[in-house]
Amino acid sequence: MASIPTTQWAQVVEQKGGPPIYKEIPVPKPGPDEVLVKVKYTGVCHTDLHAMKGDWPLALKLPLVGGHEGAGTVVAKGELAAGIEIGDKAGIKWLNGSCLACEFCKTSDEPLCAEAQLSGYTVDGTFQQYAIGKAAHVTKLPDNVALDAVAPILCAGITVYKGLKESGARPGQTVAIVGAGGGLGSLAQQYAKAMGLRVIAIDGGDEKRAMCEELGAEAYVDFTTSKDLVADVKAATPGGLGAHAVLLLAVSEKPFQQAVEYARPRGAIVAIGLPANAFLKAPVFDSVVKMINIKGSYVGNRQDGVEAIDFFARGLIKAPFKTVPLKDLPKVFELMEQGKIAGRYVLEIPE
Image (tube, rainbow, N blue to C red; front, side):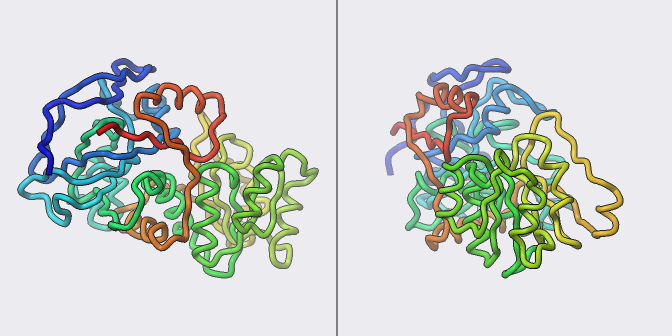
């Protein structure tokens, strides 16, 4: 195996708001329970833009190397790093590490750990040639997966897979996916179908209609043309009773306040999208008499990651993506801010 250099190329955010600067920085050394991954590809998520801007009420590391959808090969490890070996393919996700000892970690809710480390936010992420991850939290990837194609699964895929599990929807039941034509939504439809669920896609425009129908949605409700979205969604469900589950991936607030109206009695509404300054509101009467379950879903735990990757490895999930060089990250952020990205951009890391 080639020796590990002392310096590397990375995209570094030096001040809140950015922009990222393409520069040489030292290659980090793994601690006792960590591995060093030579990153080959890394997806660009909207969260990376939030991180650069410091949009969320979380302590932001500065200077910061962003990124949390990194796929590559383990090239070094600490003496206490178990479960993964040098030469293994590995994925670095949003959850970079956790304490493994608190109540949440011990009950498989490690994303809720108070000491959770977040790739590309509280610790340096994957917009660099070599990245560090806790051995317990990196995801060992099957040898047969393409590293560019699997990168978006490490965040977007795991997130929607977790949300579907949280909904409690069972095979044969109906899930309404709001924002079905976006990057998360296209993956959510595929996971739902692979899990035996029936999909009602909610989004806007004929281009997204065509994509959702191609992905197997039984119905498409266009919020830009529908005169009564609630009635249209209910009409598409068995018996007109509403969806068993609603997955909210929208980037605006209104869908979060509308979902109770077309959820089936005893239905589950799962909030995943994070529109800025938005609030969840629901009519108390309908929520009570229909016994609606409203909940949030964050990222998956370690086993969720293994399962989500397995769906991909078996050929059941395909994330649409375009590949560009690492140095083009600022251009990707510009397109993201303009709303001009379909699917995912994946950065190719230089050798």
